[in-house]
Length: 559
Ligand code: TEU
Ligand code: CA
Image (cartoon, rainbow, N blue to C red; front, side, top):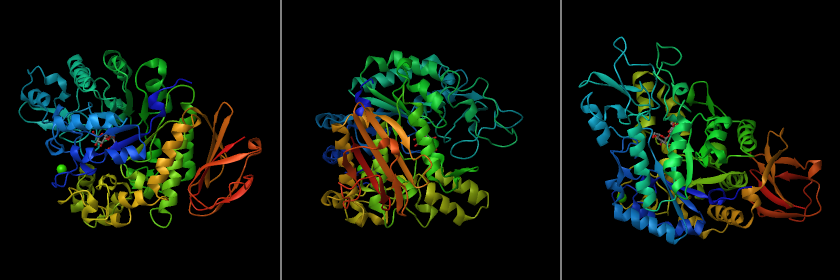
Protein backbone atom coordinates (compact mmCIF):
# COMPACT_ATOMS: atom_id res chain seq x y z
CA UNK A 1 0.00 0.00 0.00
CA UNK A 2 1.61 3.17 -1.25
CA UNK A 3 0.37 6.22 0.64
CA UNK A 4 -0.31 9.51 -1.17
CA UNK A 5 -2.12 12.76 -0.40
CA UNK A 6 -4.23 12.45 -3.52
CA UNK A 7 -5.53 9.07 -2.37
CA UNK A 8 -6.58 10.49 0.99
CA UNK A 9 -8.05 13.70 -0.43
CA UNK A 10 -11.65 14.66 -1.05
CA UNK A 11 -11.94 16.94 -4.09
CA UNK A 12 -14.56 19.65 -4.64
CA UNK A 13 -15.23 20.88 -8.18
CA UNK A 14 -16.01 24.55 -8.77
CA UNK A 15 -17.64 25.59 -12.05
CA UNK A 16 -16.84 29.28 -11.61
CA UNK A 17 -19.50 30.75 -13.87
CA UNK A 18 -22.20 29.30 -11.62
CA UNK A 19 -20.56 29.34 -8.20
CA UNK A 20 -20.89 32.85 -6.76
CA UNK A 21 -21.13 36.29 -8.37
CA UNK A 22 -19.47 39.10 -6.43
CA UNK A 23 -20.20 42.15 -8.60
CA UNK A 24 -23.78 41.79 -9.80
CA UNK A 25 -23.09 41.10 -13.49
CA UNK A 26 -24.82 37.73 -13.14
CA UNK A 27 -21.65 35.71 -13.74
CA UNK A 28 -19.80 33.84 -11.02
CA UNK A 29 -16.25 35.06 -10.48
CA UNK A 30 -13.03 34.65 -8.52
CA UNK A 31 -13.95 37.12 -5.77
CA UNK A 32 -17.13 35.09 -5.41
CA UNK A 33 -15.04 31.96 -4.85
CA UNK A 34 -12.88 33.78 -2.30
CA UNK A 35 -16.02 34.78 -0.40
CA UNK A 36 -16.98 31.12 -0.02
CA UNK A 37 -13.64 29.58 1.00
CA UNK A 38 -14.69 29.46 4.65
CA UNK A 39 -17.73 27.45 3.61
CA UNK A 40 -15.52 24.94 1.79
CA UNK A 41 -13.17 24.73 4.74
CA UNK A 42 -16.15 24.03 6.99
CA UNK A 43 -17.19 21.20 4.66
CA UNK A 44 -13.67 19.81 5.03
CA UNK A 45 -12.54 19.30 1.43
CA UNK A 46 -8.82 18.99 0.72
CA UNK A 47 -8.55 19.93 -2.93
CA UNK A 48 -10.48 22.20 -5.27
CA UNK A 49 -10.67 21.39 -8.96
CA UNK A 50 -11.40 24.67 -10.65
CA UNK A 51 -12.99 24.47 -14.10
CA UNK A 52 -11.30 26.85 -16.60
CA UNK A 53 -10.83 30.49 -15.61
CA UNK A 54 -8.57 31.40 -18.55
CA UNK A 55 -9.28 34.00 -21.24
CA UNK A 56 -12.06 32.69 -23.42
CA UNK A 57 -14.76 33.86 -25.80
CA UNK A 58 -17.01 31.41 -23.92
CA UNK A 59 -18.39 29.39 -26.79
CA UNK A 60 -18.18 26.43 -24.37
CA UNK A 61 -17.99 28.31 -21.05
CA UNK A 62 -14.22 28.53 -20.78
CA UNK A 63 -13.37 25.15 -22.35
CA UNK A 64 -12.44 27.20 -25.43
CA UNK A 65 -9.31 29.04 -24.34
CA UNK A 66 -7.85 32.03 -26.19
CA UNK A 67 -5.02 32.70 -23.71
CA UNK A 68 -3.81 30.02 -21.32
CA UNK A 69 -1.79 32.43 -19.23
CA UNK A 70 -4.38 35.06 -18.45
CA UNK A 71 -7.68 35.23 -16.58
CA UNK A 72 -11.10 35.62 -18.21
CA UNK A 73 -12.30 39.22 -17.89
CA UNK A 74 -15.66 38.18 -16.41
CA UNK A 75 -13.90 36.21 -13.67
CA UNK A 76 -11.42 38.87 -12.55
CA UNK A 77 -7.69 39.47 -12.76
CA UNK A 78 -4.49 37.56 -12.15
CA UNK A 79 -4.25 39.42 -8.84
CA UNK A 80 -7.68 38.05 -7.87
CA UNK A 81 -6.52 34.57 -8.84
CA UNK A 82 -3.39 34.90 -6.70
CA UNK A 83 -5.44 36.08 -3.76
CA UNK A 84 -7.70 33.06 -4.25
CA UNK A 85 -4.78 30.62 -4.30
CA UNK A 86 -3.35 32.15 -1.16
CA UNK A 87 -6.75 31.97 0.54
CA UNK A 88 -7.00 28.29 -0.33
CA UNK A 89 -3.49 27.48 0.85
CA UNK A 90 -4.02 29.38 4.12
CA UNK A 91 -6.96 27.07 4.77
CA UNK A 92 -5.00 23.95 3.88
CA UNK A 93 -6.86 23.49 0.61
CA UNK A 94 -4.99 22.59 -2.57
CA UNK A 95 -5.84 23.85 -6.05
CA UNK A 96 -6.11 21.71 -9.15
CA UNK A 97 -6.47 23.75 -12.36
CA UNK A 98 -8.21 22.54 -15.52
CA UNK A 99 -5.84 21.76 -18.39
CA UNK A 100 -7.63 21.97 -21.74
CA UNK A 101 -5.07 21.07 -24.38
CA UNK A 102 -6.85 18.80 -26.82
CA UNK A 103 -8.03 22.04 -28.40
CA UNK A 104 -7.79 25.81 -28.08
CA UNK A 105 -10.25 28.52 -28.97
CA UNK A 106 -10.25 29.61 -32.61
CA UNK A 107 -9.43 33.01 -31.12
CA UNK A 108 -6.15 31.78 -29.63
CA UNK A 109 -3.15 33.49 -31.26
CA UNK A 110 -1.79 30.10 -32.36
CA UNK A 111 -4.93 29.42 -34.35
CA UNK A 112 -5.15 32.93 -35.76
CA UNK A 113 -1.60 32.52 -37.08
CA UNK A 114 -2.28 28.95 -38.21
CA UNK A 115 -5.29 30.04 -40.20
CA UNK A 116 -3.56 33.02 -41.80
CA UNK A 117 -1.56 31.01 -44.34
CA UNK A 118 -0.36 27.53 -45.28
CA UNK A 119 3.17 28.79 -44.75
CA UNK A 120 2.64 30.04 -41.25
CA UNK A 121 5.01 28.44 -38.70
CA UNK A 122 1.83 27.76 -36.74
CA UNK A 123 0.03 25.97 -39.60
CA UNK A 124 1.02 22.62 -38.17
CA UNK A 125 -0.25 23.42 -34.68
CA UNK A 126 -3.67 22.19 -35.81
CA UNK A 127 -5.08 19.52 -38.12
CA UNK A 128 -5.61 21.06 -41.58
CA UNK A 129 -6.67 19.01 -44.60
CA UNK A 130 -8.03 19.60 -48.10
CA UNK A 131 -11.57 18.43 -48.81
CA UNK A 132 -12.36 15.08 -50.40
CA UNK A 133 -14.66 15.03 -53.45
CA UNK A 134 -16.04 18.41 -52.46
CA UNK A 135 -16.79 17.21 -48.94
CA UNK A 136 -15.09 17.19 -45.56
CA UNK A 137 -11.76 15.29 -45.25
CA UNK A 138 -13.53 12.51 -43.30
CA UNK A 139 -16.95 11.70 -41.87
CA UNK A 140 -16.32 12.32 -38.17
CA UNK A 141 -19.18 13.87 -36.25
CA UNK A 142 -18.57 16.59 -33.69
CA UNK A 143 -19.57 16.01 -30.04
CA UNK A 144 -21.65 19.16 -30.47
CA UNK A 145 -23.47 17.99 -33.66
CA UNK A 146 -22.62 18.21 -37.36
CA UNK A 147 -19.29 17.58 -39.02
CA UNK A 148 -16.06 17.71 -36.98
CA UNK A 149 -14.50 19.76 -39.80
CA UNK A 150 -14.89 23.39 -40.71
CA UNK A 151 -14.00 24.81 -44.10
CA UNK A 152 -11.81 27.88 -44.26
CA UNK A 153 -12.02 29.86 -47.51
CA UNK A 154 -8.77 31.75 -47.21
CA UNK A 155 -6.56 28.67 -47.58
CA UNK A 156 -9.19 26.37 -49.07
CA UNK A 157 -8.72 23.71 -46.38
CA UNK A 158 -10.67 22.28 -43.47
CA UNK A 159 -9.61 22.16 -39.82
CA UNK A 160 -10.58 19.49 -37.31
CA UNK A 161 -12.75 20.26 -34.29
CA UNK A 162 -14.01 17.28 -32.28
CA UNK A 163 -15.97 19.73 -30.12
CA UNK A 164 -17.37 23.08 -31.33
CA UNK A 165 -16.31 24.97 -34.46
CA UNK A 166 -14.64 27.38 -32.09
CA UNK A 167 -12.54 24.58 -30.51
CA UNK A 168 -9.95 23.50 -33.14
CA UNK A 169 -7.97 20.38 -32.14
CA UNK A 170 -4.27 20.85 -31.51
CA UNK A 171 -1.83 18.66 -33.43
CA UNK A 172 0.16 16.87 -30.74
CA UNK A 173 2.40 15.27 -33.39
CA UNK A 174 4.10 18.64 -33.58
CA UNK A 175 6.83 18.77 -30.91
CA UNK A 176 6.49 22.58 -30.74
CA UNK A 177 2.88 22.22 -29.63
CA UNK A 178 3.99 19.91 -26.86
CA UNK A 179 6.79 22.20 -25.74
CA UNK A 180 4.43 25.19 -25.63
CA UNK A 181 1.90 23.21 -23.60
CA UNK A 182 4.59 22.03 -21.16
CA UNK A 183 5.87 25.58 -20.69
CA UNK A 184 2.35 26.80 -20.04
CA UNK A 185 1.89 24.06 -17.43
CA UNK A 186 5.13 25.15 -15.72
CA UNK A 187 3.88 28.73 -15.66
CA UNK A 188 0.98 27.66 -13.44
CA UNK A 189 2.91 25.11 -11.42
CA UNK A 190 5.52 27.75 -10.63
CA UNK A 191 2.72 29.93 -9.33
CA UNK A 192 2.14 27.23 -6.76
CA UNK A 193 -0.83 25.21 -7.96
CA UNK A 194 -1.16 21.61 -6.81
CA UNK A 195 -2.22 19.74 -9.90
CA UNK A 196 -4.25 19.46 -13.07
CA UNK A 197 -7.51 17.92 -14.18
CA UNK A 198 -6.87 17.21 -17.85
CA UNK A 199 -9.76 17.74 -20.24
CA UNK A 200 -10.37 14.86 -22.71
CA UNK A 201 -6.69 14.12 -22.46
CA UNK A 202 -7.09 10.67 -24.06
CA UNK A 203 -8.18 12.39 -27.32
CA UNK A 204 -4.86 14.07 -28.09
CA UNK A 205 -3.22 11.33 -30.19
CA UNK A 206 -4.97 10.84 -33.52
CA UNK A 207 -4.46 7.87 -35.85
CA UNK A 208 -2.33 8.73 -38.90
CA UNK A 209 -4.34 9.81 -41.93
CA UNK A 210 -7.50 10.47 -39.89
CA UNK A 211 -9.59 7.78 -41.66
CA UNK A 212 -13.38 7.86 -41.86
CA UNK A 213 -15.35 5.80 -39.35
CA UNK A 214 -18.01 3.19 -40.19
CA UNK A 215 -20.29 4.24 -43.03
CA UNK A 216 -18.44 6.95 -45.01
CA UNK A 217 -21.73 8.35 -46.36
CA UNK A 218 -22.89 9.68 -43.03
CA UNK A 219 -21.36 11.50 -40.08
CA UNK A 220 -20.12 8.98 -37.52
CA UNK A 221 -18.33 9.06 -34.18
CA UNK A 222 -14.62 8.77 -34.98
CA UNK A 223 -13.57 7.83 -31.46
CA UNK A 224 -11.76 4.68 -32.59
CA UNK A 225 -9.27 6.95 -34.32
CA UNK A 226 -8.52 9.35 -31.50
CA UNK A 227 -9.61 7.92 -28.14
CA UNK A 228 -6.56 6.32 -26.46
CA UNK A 229 -4.70 6.80 -29.74
CA UNK A 230 -1.35 5.31 -30.80
CA UNK A 231 0.98 7.84 -29.10
CA UNK A 232 -1.08 8.75 -26.06
CA UNK A 233 1.20 7.00 -23.58
CA UNK A 234 4.32 8.50 -25.15
CA UNK A 235 2.86 11.97 -24.80
CA UNK A 236 1.78 11.50 -21.20
CA UNK A 237 5.10 9.98 -20.23
CA UNK A 238 6.91 12.84 -21.89
CA UNK A 239 4.68 15.34 -20.08
CA UNK A 240 5.38 13.55 -16.82
CA UNK A 241 9.13 13.44 -17.39
CA UNK A 242 9.42 17.05 -18.52
CA UNK A 243 6.88 18.67 -16.21
CA UNK A 244 4.86 16.74 -13.64
CA UNK A 245 7.72 14.77 -12.09
CA UNK A 246 9.41 18.05 -11.17
CA UNK A 247 6.56 18.98 -8.83
CA UNK A 248 4.60 17.33 -6.01
CA UNK A 249 1.20 17.43 -7.67
CA UNK A 250 -1.97 15.53 -8.33
CA UNK A 251 -3.37 14.65 -11.76
CA UNK A 252 -6.62 13.28 -13.07
CA UNK A 253 -7.24 12.67 -16.76
CA UNK A 254 -10.76 13.03 -18.09
CA UNK A 255 -11.14 10.07 -20.46
CA UNK A 256 -14.37 9.30 -22.27
CA UNK A 257 -14.20 5.76 -23.69
CA UNK A 258 -11.40 4.54 -21.42
CA UNK A 259 -11.43 0.84 -20.44
CA UNK A 260 -10.12 -0.69 -17.21
CA UNK A 261 -7.13 -2.16 -19.05
CA UNK A 262 -6.21 1.20 -20.54
CA UNK A 263 -6.71 2.87 -17.16
CA UNK A 264 -4.15 0.50 -15.67
CA UNK A 265 -1.66 1.87 -18.17
CA UNK A 266 -2.60 5.49 -17.47
CA UNK A 267 -2.52 5.15 -13.68
CA UNK A 268 -0.15 2.29 -12.84
CA UNK A 269 2.44 3.68 -10.43
CA UNK A 270 5.42 2.35 -12.41
CA UNK A 271 4.14 3.95 -15.61
CA UNK A 272 4.70 7.59 -14.64
CA UNK A 273 1.69 9.00 -16.44
CA UNK A 274 -1.28 10.14 -14.30
CA UNK A 275 -2.60 9.50 -10.77
CA UNK A 276 -6.14 8.65 -11.83
CA UNK A 277 -8.69 9.00 -14.62
CA UNK A 278 -12.36 9.89 -14.89
CA UNK A 279 -13.96 6.93 -16.62
CA UNK A 280 -17.44 7.27 -18.14
CA UNK A 281 -18.94 3.79 -18.21
CA UNK A 282 -21.31 4.39 -15.30
CA UNK A 283 -22.40 7.66 -16.93
CA UNK A 284 -23.74 5.66 -19.89
CA UNK A 285 -26.00 3.29 -17.91
CA UNK A 286 -29.08 5.26 -18.94
CA UNK A 287 -28.15 5.74 -22.62
CA UNK A 288 -29.60 3.50 -25.33
CA UNK A 289 -28.28 2.57 -28.78
CA UNK A 290 -28.96 6.11 -29.96
CA UNK A 291 -26.45 7.55 -27.50
CA UNK A 292 -26.71 10.14 -24.77
CA UNK A 293 -30.13 11.57 -25.75
CA UNK A 294 -31.72 8.14 -26.16
CA UNK A 295 -32.71 8.00 -22.49
CA UNK A 296 -33.26 4.56 -20.97
CA UNK A 297 -33.93 3.48 -17.38
CA UNK A 298 -30.83 2.42 -15.42
CA UNK A 299 -30.65 -0.73 -13.31
CA UNK A 300 -28.78 -1.29 -10.07
CA UNK A 301 -26.99 -4.20 -11.65
CA UNK A 302 -25.90 -1.93 -14.49
CA UNK A 303 -24.35 0.59 -12.13
CA UNK A 304 -22.94 -1.94 -9.68
CA UNK A 305 -21.34 -4.21 -12.24
CA UNK A 306 -19.47 -1.25 -13.75
CA UNK A 307 -18.30 0.22 -10.44
CA UNK A 308 -17.38 -3.27 -9.25
CA UNK A 309 -15.35 -3.96 -12.38
CA UNK A 310 -13.38 -0.75 -11.83
CA UNK A 311 -12.89 -1.47 -8.12
CA UNK A 312 -11.50 -4.91 -8.87
CA UNK A 313 -9.58 -3.82 -11.97
CA UNK A 314 -7.57 -1.13 -10.20
CA UNK A 315 -7.29 -2.95 -6.86
CA UNK A 316 -3.61 -3.88 -7.11
CA UNK A 317 -2.20 -1.00 -9.09
CA UNK A 318 -3.68 2.25 -10.34
CA UNK A 319 -6.35 4.30 -8.59
CA UNK A 320 -10.04 5.16 -9.08
CA UNK A 321 -11.74 8.53 -9.07
CA UNK A 322 -15.28 8.42 -7.69
CA UNK A 323 -17.99 10.69 -9.08
CA UNK A 324 -21.61 10.57 -10.15
CA UNK A 325 -21.97 14.10 -11.46
CA UNK A 326 -19.98 17.10 -12.67
CA UNK A 327 -20.57 20.14 -14.89
CA UNK A 328 -21.32 17.87 -17.89
CA UNK A 329 -23.72 15.47 -16.19
CA UNK A 330 -27.18 15.75 -14.68
CA UNK A 331 -27.49 16.08 -10.92
CA UNK A 332 -26.92 12.71 -9.26
CA UNK A 333 -29.79 12.93 -6.78
CA UNK A 334 -32.25 13.44 -9.66
CA UNK A 335 -30.64 10.81 -11.85
CA UNK A 336 -29.83 7.97 -9.44
CA UNK A 337 -31.79 8.93 -6.31
CA UNK A 338 -35.07 10.70 -5.68
CA UNK A 339 -35.41 14.48 -5.83
CA UNK A 340 -38.91 14.34 -4.30
CA UNK A 341 -40.00 12.60 -1.09
CA UNK A 342 -36.67 10.91 -0.36
CA UNK A 343 -34.45 13.77 -1.44
CA UNK A 344 -32.38 13.84 1.74
CA UNK A 345 -32.17 10.10 2.25
CA UNK A 346 -31.21 9.30 -1.32
CA UNK A 347 -28.65 12.11 -1.61
CA UNK A 348 -27.00 10.81 1.55
CA UNK A 349 -27.12 7.21 0.34
CA UNK A 350 -25.33 8.13 -2.89
CA UNK A 351 -22.79 10.18 -0.93
CA UNK A 352 -22.14 7.13 1.23
CA UNK A 353 -21.38 5.12 -1.89
CA UNK A 354 -18.95 7.70 -3.28
CA UNK A 355 -17.08 8.09 0.00
CA UNK A 356 -16.81 4.40 0.86
CA UNK A 357 -15.74 2.87 -2.43
CA UNK A 358 -11.98 2.71 -2.92
CA UNK A 359 -10.71 5.80 -4.73
CA UNK A 360 -10.74 9.58 -4.49
CA UNK A 361 -14.22 11.13 -4.12
CA UNK A 362 -15.13 14.20 -6.20
CA UNK A 363 -17.98 16.45 -5.03
CA UNK A 364 -19.51 18.73 -7.65
CA UNK A 365 -20.61 22.15 -6.36
CA UNK A 366 -24.13 22.04 -4.94
CA UNK A 367 -24.07 18.26 -4.59
CA UNK A 368 -23.36 18.74 -0.88
CA UNK A 369 -26.74 20.44 -0.46
CA UNK A 370 -28.56 18.05 -2.78
CA UNK A 371 -29.10 20.38 -5.73
CA UNK A 372 -31.39 18.84 -8.34
CA UNK A 373 -32.05 18.87 -12.09
CA UNK A 374 -34.08 21.72 -13.54
CA UNK A 375 -36.83 21.96 -16.18
CA UNK A 376 -37.10 25.22 -18.10
CA UNK A 377 -40.24 25.57 -20.22
CA UNK A 378 -38.52 27.12 -23.20
CA UNK A 379 -35.42 26.10 -25.14
CA UNK A 380 -34.54 29.82 -25.02
CA UNK A 381 -33.78 29.50 -21.33
CA UNK A 382 -30.96 27.03 -22.06
CA UNK A 383 -27.39 28.19 -22.64
CA UNK A 384 -25.31 25.04 -23.22
CA UNK A 385 -23.86 24.73 -26.73
CA UNK A 386 -24.37 20.96 -26.71
CA UNK A 387 -28.08 21.32 -25.90
CA UNK A 388 -28.66 24.19 -28.33
CA UNK A 389 -26.87 22.55 -31.27
CA UNK A 390 -28.61 19.23 -30.66
CA UNK A 391 -32.04 20.92 -30.49
CA UNK A 392 -31.31 22.84 -33.69
CA UNK A 393 -30.27 19.67 -35.49
CA UNK A 394 -33.01 17.37 -34.23
CA UNK A 395 -36.03 19.65 -33.85
CA UNK A 396 -35.51 22.75 -36.00
CA UNK A 397 -33.80 21.01 -38.93
CA UNK A 398 -34.74 17.37 -38.34
CA UNK A 399 -38.42 17.85 -37.49
CA UNK A 400 -38.30 15.59 -34.42
CA UNK A 401 -40.91 16.03 -31.72
CA UNK A 402 -39.99 19.04 -29.57
CA UNK A 403 -41.56 17.62 -26.40
CA UNK A 404 -39.60 14.41 -26.72
CA UNK A 405 -36.34 16.32 -27.10
CA UNK A 406 -37.17 18.70 -24.23
CA UNK A 407 -37.74 15.66 -22.04
CA UNK A 408 -34.33 14.28 -22.98
CA UNK A 409 -32.82 17.67 -22.08
CA UNK A 410 -34.59 17.57 -18.72
CA UNK A 411 -32.99 14.21 -17.97
CA UNK A 412 -29.55 14.55 -19.55
CA UNK A 413 -28.79 18.18 -20.43
CA UNK A 414 -25.60 19.73 -19.05
CA UNK A 415 -27.40 22.86 -17.86
CA UNK A 416 -28.97 20.70 -15.12
CA UNK A 417 -25.62 20.96 -13.37
CA UNK A 418 -24.92 24.54 -14.31
CA UNK A 419 -27.76 26.44 -12.66
CA UNK A 420 -26.29 28.81 -10.07
CA UNK A 421 -25.36 27.47 -6.65
CA UNK A 422 -28.20 28.04 -4.23
CA UNK A 423 -26.71 29.96 -1.33
CA UNK A 424 -29.84 31.20 0.43
CA UNK A 425 -33.56 31.85 0.07
CA UNK A 426 -33.27 35.40 -1.27
CA UNK A 427 -33.85 36.39 -4.89
CA UNK A 428 -31.71 34.39 -7.36
CA UNK A 429 -30.72 32.17 -4.44
CA UNK A 430 -28.15 34.69 -3.23
CA UNK A 431 -25.99 33.85 -6.24
CA UNK A 432 -26.12 37.34 -7.71
CA UNK A 433 -27.66 40.73 -7.08
CA UNK A 434 -28.15 41.08 -10.84
CA UNK A 435 -29.64 38.75 -13.44
CA UNK A 436 -28.00 35.31 -13.49
CA UNK A 437 -26.51 34.16 -16.83
CA UNK A 438 -28.54 30.95 -16.46
CA UNK A 439 -31.76 30.87 -14.46
CA UNK A 440 -31.71 29.66 -10.89
CA UNK A 441 -33.52 26.42 -10.08
CA UNK A 442 -36.89 27.53 -8.62
CA UNK A 443 -36.49 25.09 -5.71
CA UNK A 444 -33.88 27.35 -4.06
CA UNK A 445 -36.21 28.38 -1.25
CA UNK A 446 -36.18 24.74 -0.07
CA UNK A 447 -32.69 23.74 -1.11
CA UNK A 448 -29.96 26.21 -0.19
CA UNK A 449 -26.69 26.35 1.71
CA UNK A 450 -27.89 28.68 4.43
CA UNK A 451 -30.69 26.31 5.37
CA UNK A 452 -28.36 23.32 5.16
CA UNK A 453 -25.85 24.87 7.53
CA UNK A 454 -28.58 25.48 10.11
CA UNK A 455 -30.05 21.97 9.93
CA UNK A 456 -27.90 19.39 11.78
CA UNK A 457 -29.64 16.63 9.80
CA UNK A 458 -28.88 18.23 6.39
CA UNK A 459 -27.13 16.65 3.44
CA UNK A 460 -24.32 19.17 4.00
CA UNK A 461 -23.69 17.93 7.54
CA UNK A 462 -23.74 14.34 6.35
CA UNK A 463 -21.03 15.13 3.77
CA UNK A 464 -19.05 16.85 6.48
CA UNK A 465 -19.33 13.74 8.61
CA UNK A 466 -18.26 11.44 5.75
CA UNK A 467 -15.24 13.62 4.99
CA UNK A 468 -14.24 13.75 8.65
CA UNK A 469 -14.61 9.99 8.93
CA UNK A 470 -12.19 9.53 6.03
CA UNK A 471 -9.60 11.56 7.93
CA UNK A 472 -9.92 9.28 10.97
CA UNK A 473 -10.06 5.86 9.34
CA UNK A 474 -7.43 4.67 6.88
CA UNK A 475 -9.65 1.79 5.92
CA UNK A 476 -11.84 4.20 3.94
CA UNK A 477 -8.85 5.14 1.80
CA UNK A 478 -6.66 2.07 1.68
CA UNK A 479 -8.95 -0.83 2.62
CA UNK A 480 -9.53 -3.64 0.13
CA UNK A 481 -12.94 -3.72 -1.51
CA UNK A 482 -15.01 -6.88 -1.69
CA UNK A 483 -18.52 -7.17 -3.12
CA UNK A 484 -21.22 -9.05 -1.20
CA UNK A 485 -24.83 -9.88 -2.17
CA UNK A 486 -23.86 -9.66 -5.83
CA UNK A 487 -27.25 -10.95 -6.95
CA UNK A 488 -29.38 -8.44 -5.06
CA UNK A 489 -31.45 -6.26 -7.35
CA UNK A 490 -32.11 -3.79 -4.51
CA UNK A 491 -28.95 -3.48 -2.45
CA UNK A 492 -25.35 -2.57 -3.24
CA UNK A 493 -23.25 -3.93 -0.37
CA UNK A 494 -19.52 -4.48 0.07
CA UNK A 495 -16.79 -4.66 2.65
CA UNK A 496 -13.58 -2.69 3.07
CA UNK A 497 -10.75 -4.41 4.90
CA UNK A 498 -7.43 -3.10 6.17
CA UNK A 499 -5.50 -5.36 8.56
CA UNK A 500 -7.87 -6.18 11.41
CA UNK A 501 -10.27 -3.45 10.44
CA UNK A 502 -13.39 -4.57 8.57
CA UNK A 503 -16.22 -2.30 7.49
CA UNK A 504 -19.42 -3.34 5.84
CA UNK A 505 -21.36 -0.89 3.67
CA UNK A 506 -25.04 -1.55 2.97
CA UNK A 507 -26.97 0.66 0.52
CA UNK A 508 -30.62 0.39 -0.46
CA UNK A 509 -30.86 2.00 -3.91
CA UNK A 510 -34.68 2.24 -3.98
CA UNK A 511 -37.67 3.80 -2.28
CA UNK A 512 -39.10 0.40 -1.36
CA UNK A 513 -38.11 -1.26 1.90
CA UNK A 514 -35.97 -4.31 1.37
CA UNK A 515 -34.60 -7.24 3.38
CA UNK A 516 -30.91 -7.44 4.11
CA UNK A 517 -29.33 -10.75 5.01
CA UNK A 518 -25.74 -10.96 6.18
CA UNK A 519 -23.58 -13.50 4.31
CA UNK A 520 -22.40 -16.29 6.61
CA UNK A 521 -18.68 -15.46 6.23
CA UNK A 522 -19.25 -12.07 7.86
CA UNK A 523 -20.40 -13.49 11.22
CA UNK A 524 -18.94 -11.32 13.99
CA UNK A 525 -19.08 -10.61 17.73
CA UNK A 526 -19.41 -6.87 17.86
CA UNK A 527 -20.62 -4.18 15.54
CA UNK A 528 -20.35 -0.43 15.59
CA UNK A 529 -22.45 1.85 13.40
CA UNK A 530 -20.02 4.33 11.83
CA UNK A 531 -22.54 6.39 9.86
CA UNK A 532 -26.08 6.10 8.59
CA UNK A 533 -28.66 8.32 6.90
CA UNK A 534 -31.39 7.31 9.38
CA UNK A 535 -31.44 8.31 13.05
CA UNK A 536 -33.81 5.58 14.18
CA UNK A 537 -31.44 2.61 14.10
CA UNK A 538 -30.98 0.50 17.22
CA UNK A 539 -27.22 0.18 17.20
CA UNK A 540 -27.27 -2.92 19.39
CA UNK A 541 -29.61 -4.80 17.09
CA UNK A 542 -27.86 -7.74 15.40
CA UNK A 543 -27.49 -7.31 11.65
CA UNK A 544 -27.87 -10.91 10.53
CA UNK A 545 -31.22 -9.97 9.09
CA UNK A 546 -33.07 -6.67 9.03
CA UNK A 547 -35.26 -4.42 6.93
CA UNK A 548 -33.67 -1.49 5.13
CA UNK A 549 -35.80 1.64 4.94
CA UNK A 550 -36.14 3.68 1.70
CA UNK A 551 -32.67 4.61 0.39
CA UNK A 552 -31.17 3.56 3.70
CA UNK A 553 -27.38 3.52 3.99
CA UNK A 554 -25.50 1.93 6.89
CA UNK A 555 -21.80 1.58 7.48
CA UNK A 556 -20.71 -0.82 10.24
CA UNK A 557 -17.36 -1.74 11.69
CA UNK A 558 -17.48 -5.41 12.63
CA UNK A 559 -15.17 -7.48 14.78
O1 TEU B 1 -15.92 17.06 -21.76
C1 TEU B 1 -15.62 16.01 -22.59
C2 TEU B 1 -16.72 15.12 -22.98
O2 TEU B 1 -16.60 14.43 -23.97
C3 TEU B 1 -17.96 15.03 -22.23
O3 TEU B 1 -17.95 15.11 -20.90
C4 TEU B 1 -18.96 15.89 -22.90
O4 TEU B 1 -19.08 17.17 -22.38
C5 TEU B 1 -20.27 15.23 -22.77
O5 TEU B 1 -20.13 13.90 -23.02
C6 TEU B 1 -21.20 15.80 -23.78
O6 TEU B 1 -22.28 14.95 -23.84
C7 TEU B 1 -14.96 18.03 -21.55
C8 TEU B 1 -15.48 19.11 -20.64
O7 TEU B 1 -15.71 18.57 -19.37
C9 TEU B 1 -16.69 19.72 -21.27
O8 TEU B 1 -17.30 20.67 -20.43
C10 TEU B 1 -16.25 20.37 -22.55
O9 TEU B 1 -17.38 20.83 -23.25
C11 TEU B 1 -15.48 19.40 -23.45
O10 TEU B 1 -14.53 18.61 -22.75
C12 TEU B 1 -14.70 20.18 -24.47
O11 TEU B 1 -13.66 20.87 -23.83
CA1 CA C 1 -19.41 38.55 -11.64
